[in-house]
Image (cartoon, rainbow, N blue to C red):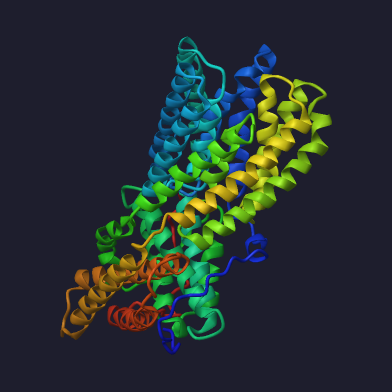
Length: 554
């Protein structure tokens, strides 16, 4: 519970930070999974084409192989379906691009098609929450294919290559299920416990408590999303659910939480050992089925129209500007613009800075590596594999670091079809990056998102209603246990949505002042009600009985 005094609503200062955008963070806990998967997905097709002397076809096999970057945070039951849709989406975009390239040689038409595809890919990826890496990889594949020499007769064969390697990428991403079938759920639960421990460490009022609380609820929501997408409630899932409830309770009552115990539970979830037993009261444990009903609240989506218009307009104008400057690969500018668009203008600006810095440094890396890559086709393939691994190693620390590896890899891919002059490649890449970033950001500023304030109002209304529902149940002498659990979960979801919506709206420009005081008051009262609900349910930690473990080996 926060004791921060509400502040009057006022328009936030519009700053364009530079240093903060380039700050390096900690790597993702699972960075090695997409890194190893993409190498395993690219290497066999690439080496096969090398042996056959047909590296000119590598662009199409890479399209399918890059699908191995997706869905590593999803449980395997859900991952299987998500990856199928990713491969189908990649094939759909590739098919449109190849047919367009075979029917017209007009660069203006091709850029227009690429911009429309980029907007559609952005909307679909955001709506389905597919990511990372989201729409950027799909846009790179389709945009590059628009400018590849093509005939209609060649399209089926090229699509078949992408489909086969997409199927191989699916197998690569699903293979770890044979060893650790509940790994993603265990990792998501451990992340929720660690985030709750971090908030408990602040006591609910210490330095950075608001940020830690928001991060905690986001991690808890991600854990529920993972658990609720696994299908049948196995013993392992039930044990993990109880741990996530413990994380939620710690967020609701941080002063009564045992941060050390939460971290110990998180540590015990590594590997394939038994899942710790949270020791919930029997009644509370029996009512965990109620969280499934609350899961639908997390699927709420904001209006995507402004993002779609920004993407289409920005990508089109970036491509046209590149053509006007006489650059031979306008799709680089198009992809740069597509990569910028985030939840609001502030985040879009940060991504523009990261993209430019990363690409410029990446061009310098390419200059150093080009002589080695030009030793022969085998060296070219090995360099691409090394950069694909390096990109995933670095990108979770900061986007610009990942771009340092992505840029030389993209430049090397252009040489699969034949030798390119390094100086010309480097110049075009830098020009297209700067043009794409500038034009793309201007388009983002020009297309306003005045609905952001309306979303905050709706989130406030939803949070108030959820709190009132929980308060009514608390006022009853003997409330229904299932109803009380559903009310607690609904309030937790509503508060998490409120914070995410307010943060997104705060970074948007050209809108009325946000109701910051009302948001703070709603959060304070909501978290007080959450704590009272947890007490009424008997969910506050009992440190004397939480030492058992449940034999729930995956």
